[in-house]
Length: 223
Image (cartoon, rainbow, N blue to C red; front, top):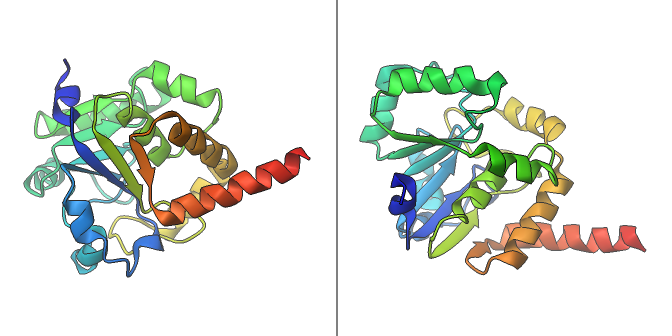
């Protein structure tokens, strides 16, 4: 059994995206009540003013390893560890040559401060047969469901129909670039298949509504 599998085995996991759909929902205690809290890309550091809505915990980050405006330094990684981050998971496999330098840079600075792993190349390749450019959140869901977890609750996703909450390292321009790069219809269809396939996966009411609307539109297109 690998270290990550051992870490997540039998756990109730909350995967929290940065979408503004969580504003005012007072989900913080519910999120923090899970065994493991997973967040995405630029979620660290958490905005403390929003703790009542998004929680205070961050155990795992699924990251594209592009720190953009955030200058990655050794002390940054050490601060992540102090704030409770235990695992950094690259959404780019080590086999992807054009992203390999990102992984190497992180590992050079990390030096064991955080546990680190990258998505398997075969997993991303399998996903890309249906979704050319899967969202980080969809990749995290697919990856987590490979392990013997107990339950996965997903919240804070809007498929870029809303802006982000006020995270220090999330910029509005990131969403605009993501919409151009990631086909959200494909991502919604893929998530629908995951929900139908795996009873351990549960999404919040906002995501459920977006997926329902997407499914209805798909049926109309097929007529």
